[in-house]
Length: 198
Ligand code: IMP
Ligand code: MG
View (tube, rainbow, N blue to C red):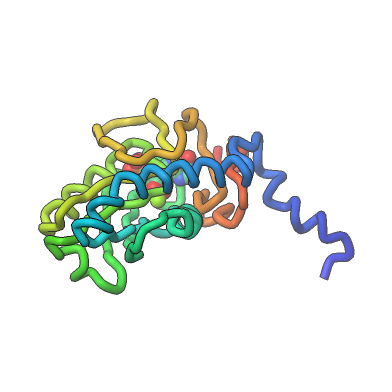
């Protein structure tokens, strides 16, 4: 064990150029998204008794989903899926592979509304492919929710129904977002120093 624990705490922070969103700012952003979702689905879920499934895209959305569902004031189900378009670098490979978690049958239920929850929309290729896969399954509805949007990098048009915040065209990490599987555990979001990946 190191004597000075601050050394350990700062080891990831050294790779961060600038903090974009603090924990408190993220909490506010996630709260606003949850409020919008609660308002949009209240009647469907509470009056019409339709189901709502929050479908988180792993690994990037794990922190976001965890905080988001606590703030959605409705009975919901939570499921996860894997969709990867990134290797270990910072540029999309363009190929998306999809794997749904424990209860894939719930995604085929005609009484179920699905909200796909992603960490960030960049080129838009991942979400647009996910959307076409999900829309073939015969659910009541499929909506998209993303914590961040980098609109300058868009290659494929996607409409994000529930968005947290726009971010500049920089590579960001933390709060679930990774570079080469690292930095996901940061409680804030920051711009990664270019020297780390260039
Ligand atoms: P897209 O298909 O280009 O929209 O890629 C979306 C995926 O790329 C996200 O789910 C992230 O995993 C990853 N990604 C895009 N931009 C960033 C970033 O700035 N930091 C970390 N991951 C990113
Ligand atoms: Mg991702």
